[in-house]
Length: 113
Length: 113
Figure 1 (cartoon, rainbow over the protein chains, first blue to last red):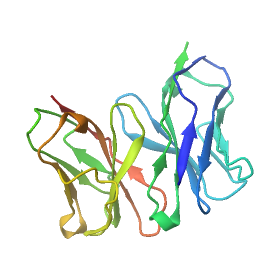
Figure 2 (cartoon, rainbow over the protein chains, first blue to last red):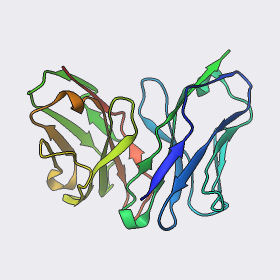
Figure 3 (tube, rainbow over the protein chains, first blue to last red):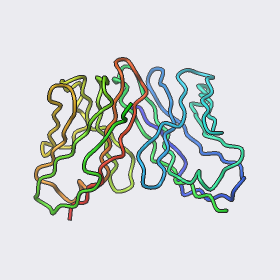
Figure 4 (cartoon, each protein chain N blue to C red):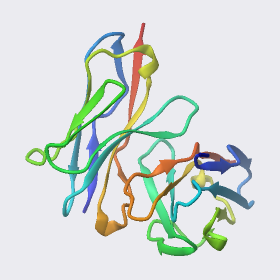
């Protein structure tokens, strides 16, 4: 079946550190891949997406590259800020499934000043 | 343009009671999805409407859950009777026809005591 696996948290980093949150997927067909973010007390926001192999999604200094050969979509940021503290979700959709989102478990990120 | 809205933001009820959650999608979005995150676990798909029709309700956990989308506008999700394991955050999302990017509401936090 289709699934998403992401690294467990919480991940605790100091401000200006480099961030990587790993995400791998299993899918039948060619999925689109997403990172959503949930800031404290808020709803889910789309952070970035990629719709085909080798595409790079980017937003707010975050990047993720769709790697078909390793079935991965790791989230990276070069220098994190306290305001990046949130829960990050990796997800995929497939056209054959009417774009229903299949989610990873979420990774809580804590950035300390 | 108004985003997806959900009401109420929080609901605390006793086991056996009934609760109705409401979602207003972005105007013009034919697709409406319901998801929930229970006890800090993965976000799970519940169902998908296209306009007023249920396209996929494979994620509905049991017949205590009833979703409607009258007139293809707002949607309601009723839980009757509520059980302890129904506690969690219920998210609603909408998207355009053929659109794979879903826009989420802030969620409804349901606590069943």
